[in-house]
Each structure stands twice: as structure tokens, then as C-alpha cells.
Image (cartoon, rainbow, N blue to C red):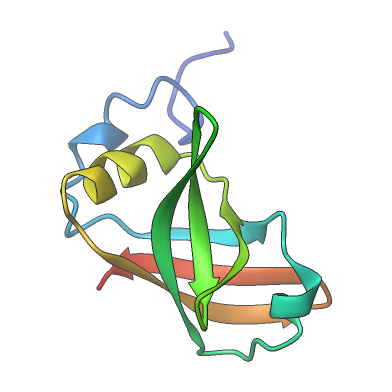
Length: 108
């Protein structure tokens, strides 16, 4: 019987009840920008922000006011809702392996 249970990738109804203050995401930087990623070290702090290009709004990660990459995670919609509601988040670099940069996003 497939489709039952919760792995964080499904409907998202349970996850959307997480408070904005309690929302924590462990993920990797999506679409990393090499010129910025090469400047990062473990424990660096990136600003999490929204950026609209044409009609698409993306969650971007800023380091020294430069886009380091974007966020693509199962709870992205909840994160977007919280940011649009005024919540602020930071992303801490937890590991770096070449272009793969792991981050932990939490309320600032």
C-alpha cells in the first residue's frame, strides 16, 4: 500500500502547521553560484530572502549582498509564507563539499 505515511514530500498539511519561529530546514543550496560559493566557509551566515524575476518568486540566499544560490526544499512553501508574513531567516553553512553546500535555515 503506497502513498500512506509521511516523508515530508507529500501533501504538506501537517508541516504547514509548524510555527514560523519553529521552522527549521536542513538542505543544500540549489543553483549554487560558483563565484560566491567559493567564498563560503562552514559556519558562515547567509541571509534568506525573496526575489521576484518576471512572475516567479524564488527564495534566495545572500552572502555579502550577492546571491549564493536558492532554496529548494520540501517545506519551501511554508518558508515563503513565513517570509511574506514578515519572519526573518538566516542560513548557516553546515558543510561544504565542492559545489555542494549544506545549510541549516532557522529564524533569525
